[in-house]
Image (tube, rainbow, N blue to C red; front, side):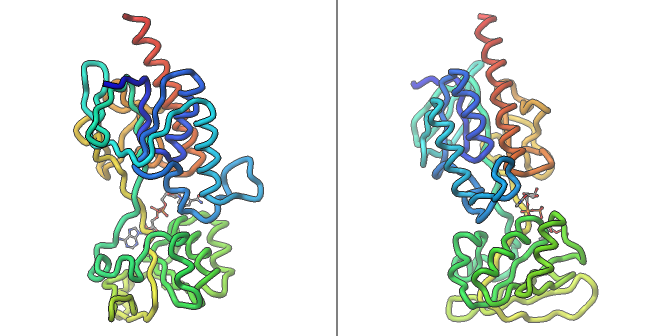
Length: 311
Ligand code: NAP
């Protein structure tokens, strides 16, 4: 069975930075990624709050640079290699990857998160036929059309602004009467004439005909009557769910399913570290994912050294 020092699971900013630090310390480091390296940021049009890039850069470019840097320093990348299982094996971990087994001395979990669903009628039926979770992927399909963005956080408001490049009208539907998004993003949203706010509204149903979205039924959280909003597409950004299934039986999760870590990235299980959006850390940004990836790798290397010294 192949034996490695540090298995990094997930190739987003947290995993790529952990891999960079581990590989530079000459640990045998393998990044397992179920798709291609980059993580959620590759679906982000523009990143303008990652230090060192005053003009910003595309999420795709940032992911690519991080990947190249980790690879240049010796990290081994296994793309389209989803880890199916992690099992303790004495002090090590046995990973099942594409029906093969790999032994890792340490695991750094950086599997990230997936966008939440609304769980309303019509959402599943019209996914890919007007319902989307990725403005960068699908925005251009809605040139001169009318779309709605659901949510009031950073993702919803940034992506709504991005969609105004294509759509003739972008409705933002938010369940409260104030946004959660960062103030400077809010300012740009309120200045944009293509955006129309729908405060204190929730989606009750996605309506469609002939296999495509035709509108959404909105309910009010302030006592107003329900209304039907005709449109061509709906983009859902109502938060994220942790991709923590692999470690549910191994370490402690919080009540929302995010992996609990200490300030060094250690989970409740020895030798298992975690970083990035999969963890219970508050600030979910590229820069914090990268920083936490570095901390987790640093601690993982120290743990490995201590183990080797005590043999
Ligand atoms: P978020 O910050 O958790 O915001 C989710 C939004 O969806 C909130 O406005 C919430 O409303 C609303 N919502 C939640 N459940 C809903 C439901 N069932 N129906 C209707 N609305 C619902 O999530 P996010 O925007 O995806 O961001 C996730 C993390 O990534 C955050 O930490 C965020 O700061 C970070 N992020 C940062 C950037 C950036 O810095 N440029 C970009 C994207 C994401 P309430 O406000 O009423 O709770």
